[in-house]
Image (cartoon, rainbow, N blue to C red; front, top):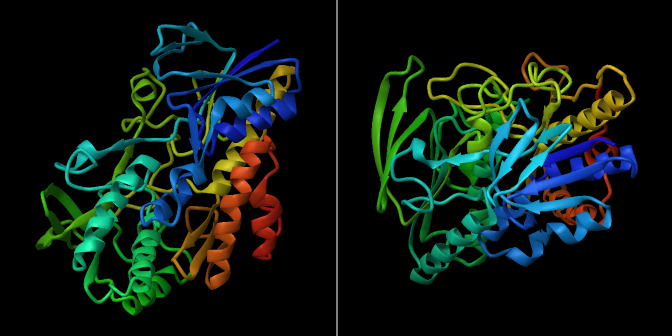
Length: 423
């Protein structure tokens, strides 16, 4: 019997545990380790930040549902990964041995990279449900005041730009519904070299379509924005030229700011010698396995993927839902193969597929492969995306409660887009 430990219980870790149980049956032990005792559906956090959802509607207790699938759960923070002894040291003082380790921790939100940023400083994020709730508390005060400015954007080294666009347009929609849009201004500041870059070098006509949408919604922007620091009510941004020189220095006054931070590896992972790149992301081969530590696999935002291209302000490459789903499936089949003496051969599909809500409409894109030139570069806008994201939220949370591991993107989203199975 093998002991398989999944570190992390997010949109990669929970499906990984379920899929491992379905693939391996009852003959092996599966344990999930997570610092929090609840799962949160992160894509819904922008809705929480404007009061369209609450914590109860997008979270669920982990242990209750894992136990139903005969999966153990340990609520603790991993303090150390001992790769030689194949053992985790946990914050509760216990040690946990593994035959195989699947690292799916997600990232550390690295607010320290920009002075004064983060919920402990002078900005917010929508990366966790708690952060989204903190924004909403301030947003309610601004709405009550009835006028002001909101800054939305992404900091240098950010790698997940979609939620910034989503949130700016969700805010626009919500303020129009409240008949306050003419009184509350939204300004967009991003490290991307142009609107619609998305950390992917653009997808189809993402630049033109998103620029048009921003103009229509009266959301001015700064690109190549190197956010330097936050003070109370003020953000300092250098707008760079293509050669990296400073074009314009901006000091923008605001009432509330939601600026997505850069990502870094979580401490226990980043501090493990030989496991990660300099920013703490796990190194993996084509089979999602570590090149040196052969019993360690990794999937999701915590893995190392190089930027698509060099940009004046550093930007990272996003890891979207379909990519994470395919990584997890590859890992499960590779561990299954190893357990019967086969060499791992399964590979994930590193394609970017995203549904971005815009409050009353939405945009969807598909990039195959993620790094251009591409076989598929597809970008569409429409009300159907807004409805599809709502359906996806309900489906995914229900799937996590049922403990099923069916591939949603493969079976549903690609068919909706008229795309055959990706190889």
